[in-house]
Amino acid sequence: MVKHISIHQIDTASLSCEPLLERTANGELLCVCQCGGVREPDPENRVYVFHSRDEGKTWSKKESIYPEDGQAVYCTELTVDGEEITAYLTVHSGRFLDWKCFMMKSFDNGYTWKNFGAPPFFPEYTFMRARLTTSDGRILLPYQTYPVTKEEHDRVMREYEDKSVTRTKTPYCESGVLESRDQGRSYEKHEACRMDLSDGWIWSEPTLAELSDGRIAMLLRQNGGVLCRCDSENGGRTWGEVYLTDIPNPANKPRLFMLDGGRIALIHTPNSSKRYPLQLWISDDDMKTWKYQTTLVDFPGAYSYTDGFYENGHIKFVIEHNRHTILYFDVELEK
Image 1 (cartoon, rainbow, N blue to C red):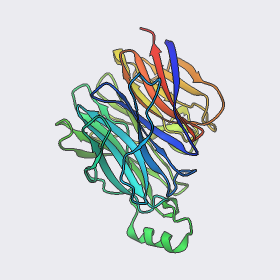
Image 2: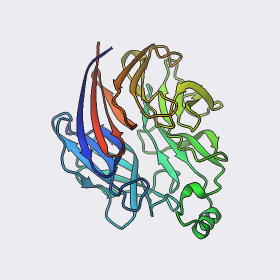
Image 3: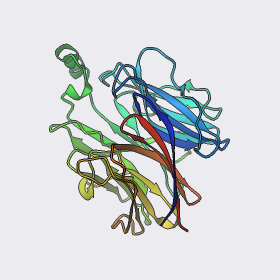
Image 4: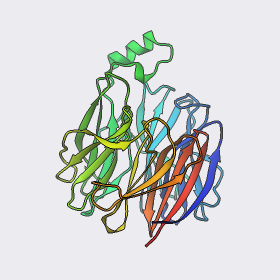
């Protein structure tokens, strides 16, 4: 089913990680990723943009997306609505303990940016994830959020030198969706599931797909060697119980893509302990089975944080390799 694969390097540095990819209104490719410092999280982390005018073969020099104020910056979702581009940012002092959420917007294809404040419902301790537009035109914007209290914040500040958010006694990670029926002018919040944090911190990183009958499937990362799943029977408003799938996963972000003809693609690393090989799975039966599975890259290393889009028979995505290198993939599928 894969006809051709092109791979190009966007950036390599002491840290280059967690990239996002969209096409802008002027036809360019726009990649947003985290660089700066030698690890993540770190006070030196920053978010940069890269542009490509030749379908990913070459990329511009990186430019900062957020005004320099000494804080760490992180981006988890990038959306394009005509001339309006939104980057959903997390800003913190270095260990996510004082994490605030902002929307940076660009109206010139990602060359200049302005802060538009917090996203709906979530001024802090929340990551927005890959948006899905449903067949009836609704927007579903998945989120993961953590109910970190001021008391826990203050306790960790007093008791721990590393001051990490993972030191807090936060009870659960909540995942769900923000739903818009008016092209993003307003949103309703729908909780999907809560994942218990008593045995360790979970970065759930939800990704969505719409099934043929309008149901919504959500895959989530957890720490137990397989992906979790949660389903909505009514388009994302209410959700069933979260459950374990049989899809191997080494606590790595999965990414679903809607293809033509009702097919659904999953790009991930189906290994219970290591983040390789990188594989493409395709389902033609609403994710009941994944009949087509192929390896995109089997060169050793850690392949993490896939993001991108599908257009005209091509899955175009970016991914980090070993936390140092950002790669751009153009996977052409057979018709």
